[in-house]
Length: 340
Image (cartoon, rainbow, N blue to C red; front, side, top):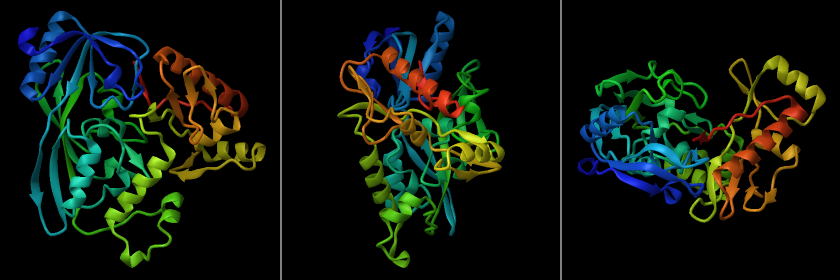
C-alpha cells in the first residue's frame, strides 16, 4: 500500500462540505491516470469498494467508509480544436469547476457563465449534468474520457453516449462505479450568446442595458445570487440543494393546481418542473432546527450542519421532509446529494 500512497483510517470531516465526521478505511490522492489504474487494480485484488471524491460537495456520509476513498487530483487544460466560432478545450477531471469557468471567461470563451460558482470538479460535472439559471452542461460536452474500472482501459464517450438528462447521465445510472471520468472536452463559443431566461437572473440584471451586458457580468451576478441564497460551506456545513426539483406530467400539474392554486411550475418538455423549495416551505420546514441539524432560514432546499451533526441525523431529517411533502402533495422528493 505504501508504494501507492494509500493511507489508513483517514478523517473525512474536512473533505466533505457537510463537515460530518466519518473515516475512510483507506484513502489515496491520485494525480495521474496511470496511478488511478494502479489504485483501482489494488482495490479489485483486495476486494474493496471504492468511492471517488472531488471536493466532497455533493456527498453525505452516513458512517465510516469501509473501502478506499480516492481523491482525484488530475489537472490540466488543453485546446484541442480552434476555429473562428468556437474552441474545444480538454479539461482534466480534477480541475475545480468554478476556476475553469472563470479561466474560460478570461480567454473570452463563452457559454458557461450561468454555471458559475457551482461547487465540485470538472469530472463530477457530467455525472450530475450540472445546470443552473437556464443552462445545462450537456449543451457544451463534445466528448469525455473515462477509465473502465474492470479493465483499466480509457474509453471515449460522445455526448450522446453520456445519455444526459435532468441531473442525470449514464455515469450516474448504468455506468455508476464502472467508469471513472478522467477528462472532459467542452466546446465553448467565441461570441457571447447570453441566456437570461431565468426570471431571478433577468431581474437582477434589469438595470443593465442589454447591449452593454457581458458574460462576465452575468457570471458575477450568478455568483452574487448564489451567495445570497446558499450558505458558505466553509462557515456552515451544507451541500447546496439537497433535493431535485420534481417533474410531473401536464395532467398531474393541472390536478395539483386545482388543489393548490398558488403552486408554481415551469414547463419542462412534456410536463412541468415544480420548485422543491416551495413544497418544503409549504410544509413548514424552512428555518427548522433541531440540535445541530436544520433547514437553512433563507433557502428551504439547503440542509445544514450547525456543528456536530452526524450524517445519519441529516438523513433522518431529509426523510422527515420527504414524508411531509408526500403526505400533503403526493409528490416524492429525491435527494440530489449522494448518500454514502
